[in-house]
Length: 236
Image (cartoon, rainbow, N blue to C red; front, side):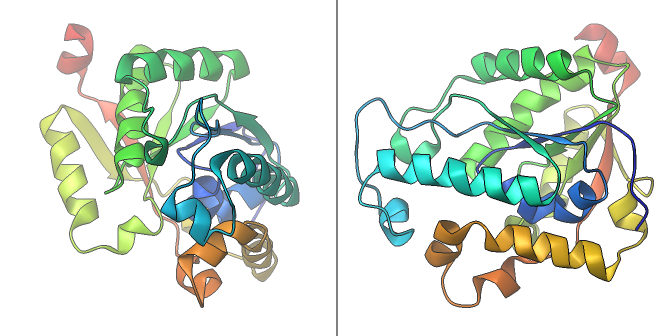
């Protein structure tokens, strides 16, 4: 896989989603920025089932450790982390769609990327919320190319991808396989190894996913070119 000089801006719902879904692409674009949305602890400490499965006693400990894991993983891929101050769904403090869209718009514009890579928005409520917020930017930032990645591990669930594509098509978005992104064209052993090592850096999340997680979470990457129909865009 050839390395690219394009400035990529990858939007990740949680602290691991970008590497799980786009690790090969990131390894080929060492100047990329990864913006993770849900990185803040709740206002009041709590203990959730997922955090306990991850090996943490409470949310404060979990989010501090997970941000450290993310920094290590992205450093392996030569990517710069940006952490937004929102709480994921397990903490019961989900942001409003428009609030999230405005924060993402400000952050993307501040980095002036060549391409923005967003989650398709499969299954998980946090993934769908982030995807829907990003979709608002597609119509507003017509000079910036947008692509969607298929969210790992949810892309493996039966019918999740075609159902989401059908939903977005009905909402006026056009999705075409993005064969211009390096990870969809070729893969090299060195880049695959970089991705596997970066995934392994998310120690707590692998613990929660259970035995064999590193193998089951490694997945072929798939991207879609994403645009808004012109008539819909002009009406937006």
